[in-house]
Image (cartoon, rainbow, N blue to C red; front, top):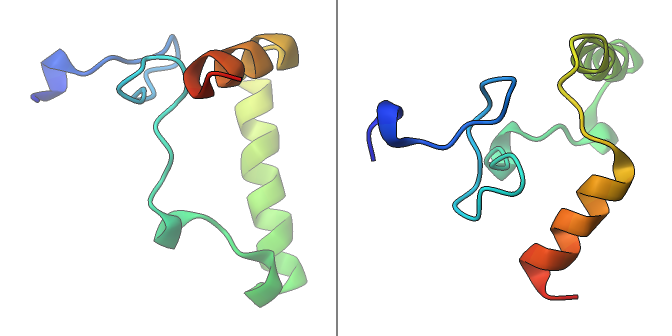
Length: 73
């Protein structure tokens, strides 16, 4: 699939094949706080806060609805 064919959300994030949720990062890219310093944890929290300020979020109810649809629960 080319970049032009990818489904993206309003923030330009690539979506999973279902189109419901942002495509997860590979596990190696996801932070593991058990191996992080306090400064590293603070940096990851700051990234999340920047996402929040930039509007790269969806309402919790919508997120749970999409999860239920995607997993048939």
